[in-house]
Length: 402
Image (cartoon, rainbow, N blue to C red; front, side, top):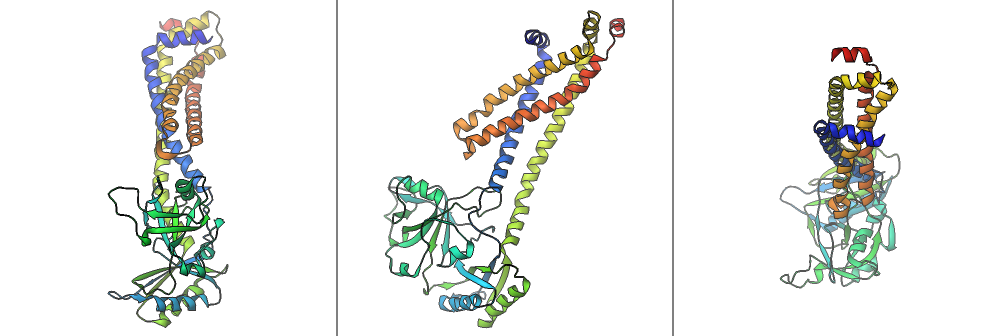
């Protein structure tokens, strides 16, 4: 039977070549869209590495053209921490999670360079405030004041990139990539690892984990700040009343500072909406493609049946049953679909082999399976009704028309 189907397909090779080409390109586009959507879904359900519930973002800004002395800023933070309902307060850099602000760079250890890495400044309360999960070592503490090198905490993926299977705690790495033309790093560019935390996803709900490093902010330094970013962990159930108290507390120290209080969940929701726009667009493109492929296949199969009425009538006259005619058309379409899908699989298989786009190989395999399933489903649905029409053609009517 299969040999007969191949013979029928070969006899109509021009028309079938167009079908195979259409199925091939449909598979490739569905594979690409499916891989991206699966990647987004995998990221969405991956651990975030920190807690966003009951965490607020406090932005304090000095008057234009002025700066905030660090001792005065520390006094403000102590008063905010003393408010009922506030559990932890942490001073950090402006690139907070789920904001559009980023700071990144590269690091070097021996003969290894890190991938692009997010940089954060953080004080001793940051881990408790954001709920980071330690894997090795510890977070910053007061005894780090006397260390020669600036203490840092890194994520697990950065640990693997810089140190591999070696122990990471106590190791010293430097800022920047290895370059013979670059000057030797000074003490300010040397960092000592005191802890390792779980991987974090701070960009959006759909972004992958990014290598990250937290550098310790020195307490009570003489730095003057133009803008201070603060994370505040509050007790569950706190609402706008506490936000108002925090704003009043900051204003009570100095009337020349402005304050904004915003929940991290609100930042997360805002970033989610921003990120969902291209994802929805991608899904709509995939759906539009599926619709166009279905309509095209349905029209081509309908036309093929009208061109083969004499063949169908002759087969019916020789004793072929209606279901047999229907299964013949479905079988032909299955073989044509398989040829188009196989060509698509050969192309899609190159992506995991070449490591394109940095996705896990199993994600590509899943995308290949999903694209193949959709293509077979579309062709089966489109071939079902035309095959039923072919099965209903009466031999006498078909042969009389010829």
